[in-house]
Amino acid sequence: MAQFATGVTIIAAPLKSGEFVGFTANSFNSVSLDPPLIVWSLARHSRSLAAFESASRYAVSVLAQHQVELARRFSRPHADRFSGVDFRLGAAGAPLIEGAVAWLECRHYALHPAGDHMLFIGEVEGCAFRAAAPLVWHSGKYLTAADQLDS
Ligand SMILES: Cc1cc2nc3c(=O)[nH]c(=O)nc-3n(C[C@H](O)[C@H](O)[C@H](O)COP(=O)(O)O)c2cc1C
Image (cartoon, rainbow, N blue to C red):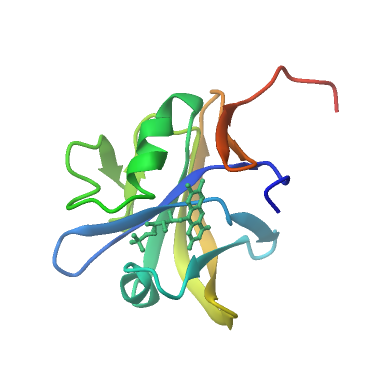
């Protein structure tokens, strides 16, 4: 799987306390167009698991190539991953990372146990994107996107 190049996202949700939970994820993918569904997985040992399991809404920010430090920060232990981070709140209160390439605001749709991970399926309630180069993850390293080729 390390040879399967992916984008890099930060998936984030609001907590009842007014704080936020968020982590770096590359397991994000599309599932269905009608209704619009996406999927991602979270390790069962994650400190964020209980928070995401009880979140009715969350947001996925697809990171731009200049956001590698954010990707690192949200994949490592940190007292407050959101402190000093430039974000805005979506319609349902989930944090959207400023400067990202795309944002998807999701409603909890389904949760499935899958080995040592939990599969989260979300229904997309809103999305936006901007023309910018994405951050890429491949073979355990961050890359910037290569030149575009014809499809
Ligand atoms: C590029 C990248 C992608 C990642 N994708 C996932 C993922 O999809 N699911 C997951 O559980 N952890 C993933 N991780 C690891 C988590 O970001 C990391 O374990 C994080 O600390 C989990 O949040 P927590 O500390 O709140 O448990 C990824 C790490 C990196 C660097």
